[in-house]
Image (cartoon, rainbow, N blue to C red):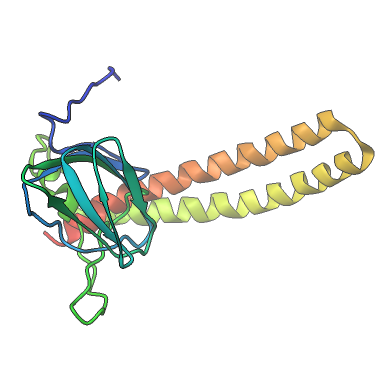
Length: 212
């Protein structure tokens, strides 16, 4: 994969989208307000690049200028408004990026039903290749879920064995064996997380397609 360079003055769009992270540059004209929402799983980081913005996060407000950042944790209701006479440009990233990526609320504080695919609709519309059928995606999702269940069960057993080895090594003062045990635990965790990523990837394809 080639190295890509993006410029906030021209690339006002989603830049990189995976289940682990979505990142983008966004510009709001003076006085414009982005809709209030939260994220069920994702933490969101905001960095102001030009102009000034008022952020409201869980009822607290602060005005940020160029070079300043703030973040909203998963579940925190947040909103941003461009303040001053000019436009405001910022970088933002949400991690993880799992559907439904945005959670909306009504004026009474009630959580609205999930909506899927809003944040990546432009990217899906621009695809040149034909997407998999909904039926094929559903089958892939189930297969990925079954694989994850199998890998998770194997991981639990491996962690138990490695944890016992770690405790023995610590009791005996054997640093080399302790390191080997922790490495074994990490190898199993890594394998499990790759299976989680595979499930996340097909889920982010399936959920938006089911609403089209």
